[in-house]
Length: 98
Image (cartoon, rainbow, N blue to C red; front, side, top):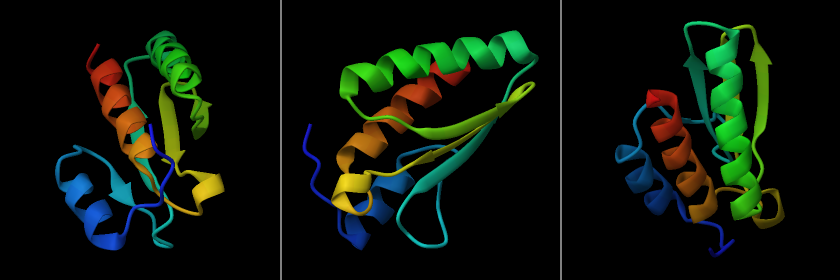
């Protein structure tokens, strides 16, 4: 998957098709907070997401406290957002639904 930085209109259009994610104030990443029933569900989500990230060779900036997982996606070597960020976000949305 290409690591070519998306222009602003492409980012805005991609966000319209991505439930729950928002553009960070600096415009360089997308962010979402996932909340689960408990720690086990949050950890299961992170495990599935980690496997997908490894396959894509694209890793999230994230943190977990009990049942909450905070995620930020950006392609650092491209200096902003690429299709990889949106692909991983789509997969994470599917995993969050169970």
